[in-house]
Length: 226
Image (cartoon, rainbow, N blue to C red):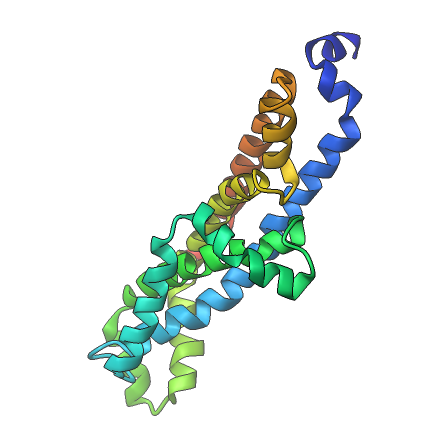
């Protein structure tokens, strides 16, 4: 323990702060991933269903949704945070802290996940959909019992990719006051010249990504019956 304290003196002195920053990052990533998936699935389903030649072709709606998704995906995340600061202040009473950051994290990740859902659903064999239609399945039944179950492994892989991206986003949000490991790395590590804090914060972020990816891969393997 003494050797570790000598190697990481600032971390040893501020261990409670490291734990708090780790919890804040997990909270931001977990909550924003939940809401991103919640928004991304229906958005991805609508993008597929309303596309030309699909079950409910509505070109105007498809174009509108596609444009909105592309706009949010095109804006760099650091700019998106600045755009949404007034909205965070309006909704949460503050533009700082982990909870306020969730809004911009969801705005950045939900459109991305929606495109992943769209891609996964397009890979479903058209013959399976036609067979369901021939048996008299309704639109809702086709979506719930055919499209989503068939695309579930790819959608789960998309959740993993989105979650890993959110870890990076959360670190970026920390630079402008959201808290978490990104804020600790920037405020104490970079600005405070605490190289050990910078190293440990980075190591924890890497570890978080590795664990998230491993868990995601395991879930996808279980879901994929091919």
